[in-house]
Length: 553
Image (tube, rainbow, N blue to C red; front, side, top):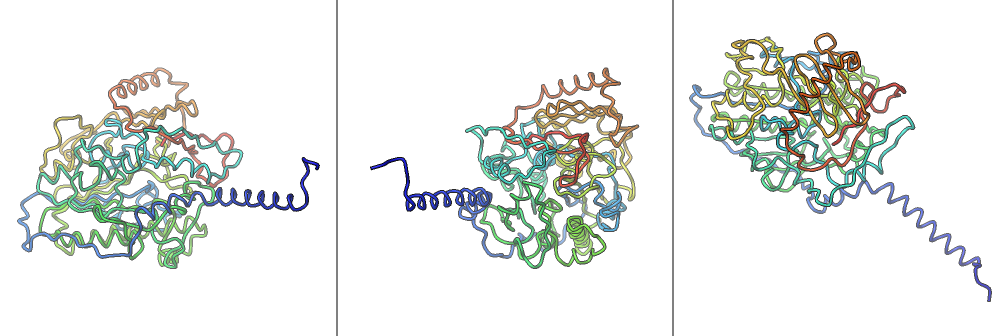
């Protein structure tokens, strides 16, 4: 009997097994990114829509001698150039009259920065008045399995720097545990102690367990974003632009759902396009609370990717040829319309003169949606410390106190929101810890001259920045680079003076080092670093000499 040879039948069986193995691996490789969404559906399914019952305030109107209501509207990834006040999408052809109205009726904070170049650390600063590095909220929460999924979805050209993945520590917390520590005193708790009823509508992204959820941090009611889509994928009521060049976009479409959560309840589906849904519920919340002091934190998901627009808004912009730009512009249209409906609701309830409205974005526009010009005239994108990533449109309307159409040019940051609103509400900010922000009211009303800050700091791992007395220093290890800019002479950060001004660069680095010696260790590690082109959006041809920086999540 001979061995070492296979007959035709055995070869056929082996061929079938190999074919099944190859096809099985192909299927796994192609569809593994859908697995987390399916697991989430089993653990926390999305139920059918149900109405939200906002707790009603008193039947009788308030005595209006007390402190004003507060509405804080935060956009997600809104670029400096996304509003027509600063230029506007598609050459200014997509008007944003309602956001512009806030600037006309209040004050523009023309030199205000996000506290981070990404969403969650900025939001942590908004809620606490403290730099996110002050208490370790340095990196954006990311599920530990996310790097694996992004790695599978990655589609690179030879010129693209690769994503860098770090091994997740076995002690890495669950995604829900990566939150605002319970020991931090958040804005709604502070306002609650001053008699305000606090409501969150929209994105929280600051945890969901161990006291990090919205209600534990002082919100009386919350209607929280609990998915990643504006409507179910493929829904006839929306138009989509899928960005095949972006691995994060691929993950969003694979695992995303259109879902919200009321309080600690189960997920359920919104019954209309998400931006319009959050707007409608904000209007209903205002109506329910018209007779008591309230704080409404309206944290829209818009215009964050994935790119999904209401079909009616998309069809109204048929002058825009580029599909992705048109979808994005339609998302801006819905967002601006929502701002107008909130302002109209305050008018209808007779509350406009007794309500402070603040508008800002968590960071600049993102490079990975592939739409150019979002942050013009500034360089950089979300996840970079160039001004395009951290300089944010910010306005505040306070009738009878702030002069309409005024400007505050002094240096400010998200950390200033809490102490400013403490002054507005007559509340007591925490006194047992460092509060990095300053009360802006004297500067907004013209009572104080000068600037609230002469120095501001940012840090995300090895990537760091400081602005001091008009000069800006950025340092990074990947690539090993130093940028120094004279912002007064060069607000576009086009001329790097690091080599010609070594003494100034060294002094700013020393200032940075001294500051970070006082900051906390990160609450969790970075597990992925994303390369970000400074000037070219993702999906567009890049030049060999294009600058880039790695952002640690």
